[in-house]
Length: 132
Image (cartoon, rainbow, N blue to C red; front, side, top):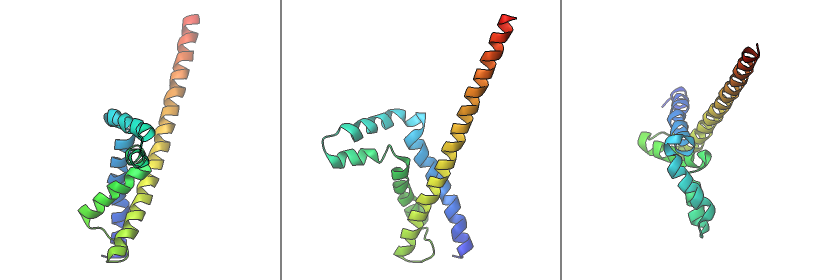
């Protein structure tokens, strides 16, 4: 596979990896399992058990396992056409997926900040109208 095609796949495959990792570790639809895993990651007696459950609470950690699934599913290798290509592809995909998740987190934070500022302005405007 040509280098340009490999890089295209790198940027594209990182998108669903980031999406799945973020959704499982942050979104409301998985809130109950997430809270259950958080409890176990903090309170289980055995260290290995705590570490296992922590994997489902951290988007960075979870993205490694999602990446492995995508490597198997897509047979994607980067630069080298043997097992080393899988290693390079795996860490590169995790890196790109985490860049995407960081950008998404910053975007969501900016949107939340704007919403709070808008609500504050609306509240102040409503108070001024009531006074007059």
